Length: 518
View 1 (cartoon, rainbow, N blue to C red):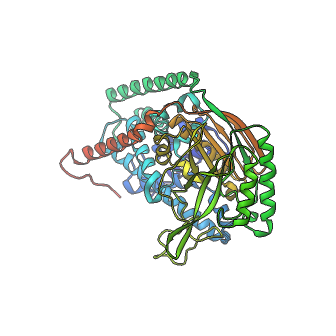
View 2: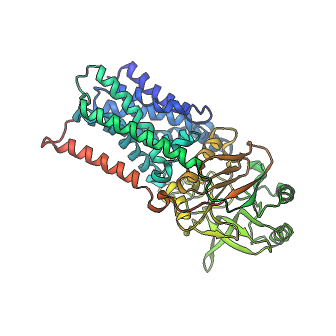
């Protein structure tokens, strides 16, 4: 029987985690937010630990990604009840990672005297990494993202990725729990042994100090000042107008008007958002010619999002969600087709098994996924272009930087999210891609947030949401490949390895499998 106090304590962890992310943004709370959950699973059975951990995760994700139901209800035309049910099921799936974390932590606490200062962060990071890529991946609201404003601490991401910051936050939660455990009598859990806890605490204190000074030194460095002038255009086109032929001319004229305004600031490159063109580029000949003729008069490169027809067979074609770079002469320099498509937004996975499920977005059928991480080359910069939520996948982004991109551009349409916290969360995650790869990020969003992030993670300019905007900035290109760009998620792999070793040693050290009580 699960006690009411344990339920409330576990739920409190989920609620505290919510406050660390937008819109509340109380990032320091996350350094202690897991402690109630760790306390709740003390002396509990495996089943109870799993349930309490899942409850904490469910509260956290419902409060953090609640906007999913908004997108489905407002733009997917699903009934409110169905939208909430899908949101609940998605959050329940994500909450299972928190549940498994609580289960494994409970097991190690019962079998090992290893301090929570060690076990909590390695288990947490291992599961965050798995969540990033399992079942197409959904790495939204990783613990480290809550610290995007804490610039001295997040500089370590150029070595460890965002997972290193998650590790530091989770480790302090473990340390607080260790102190609590030493003061409390427990019949099921082993209190951390004195010398391992002291040693781990010293190592952690030294590590945090080194991370802080490393970050301060990185922020002092000016970086590469070879750069260029870029402008982003935020059209603020309502989602229900975007593909409505009745508003096609209005959308085109809006982007023309804002782009002429941007051109007056003398940028070398102008960036439009995802699927900015309200027609199929290259397929609608008349509008394509009008658009290219307009662009040639700007005297600048133009990078924009559009839908393109792709011939995949003699009598078969599909659409791609693409980014196109035009030269000042109106010639196509590069085309990038989006690689990581949004499930049920841009394609329907497992359609054969679930034929009744259709895409939530109107218009074309399934998009064709791109195959190549194209680096767009200009005289001013080598651009890696990410489309929409591709920017939240660290492994995909580093491939562009690894191929020589010294600037990252992310074009998106966050109109789907409405006036929720999602656009702010989406923007915050881009900060880590800049730091991880030591390249600036340029963001152009249909309804916001558009803006600029330098290679140290400083937000140098941004727009509000649901307003027209033209922003121009001097951008300094990246100054060489970071350790993370060159070697990837070695830190996360190390956490997975340590987690497996800890579990294996404690599972088989006594010569028999442990008995998980129910």
